[in-house]
Image (cartoon, rainbow, N blue to C red; front, side, top):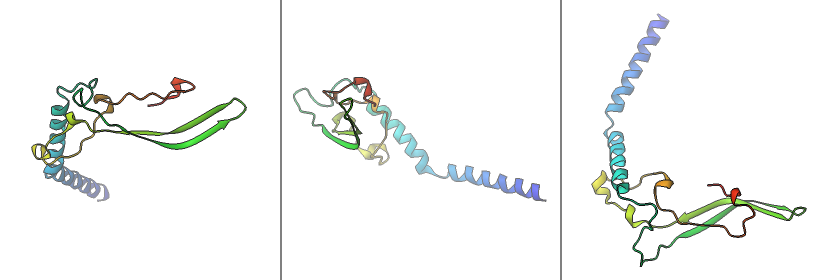
Length: 131
């Protein structure tokens, strides 16, 4: 009785999950809209070109959140660890949410879009910079 009952209960739960998954149009359509949007946005996108006309300025907001500071007086080494945040608008990555199922945010690999070149001068060792 115990084994047959457990199997029946497990089977009913699995069927319920499958039916519930198929009955969720929001989940399915969100993935479909996100895939279509990402494909459309990146179709002719060149990540090596600034996201504006050459005569316009690309404003980049840069913030650094310092998490740890270390001073090694014996070796004269000053080390700072933290987060570097950059924020800008990319006009090439704008869309009308009504055209994509009201989708207004997507996530993508940062390597696939333009990013500002930022170099820390007076860095002890360039290999210490982690991305």
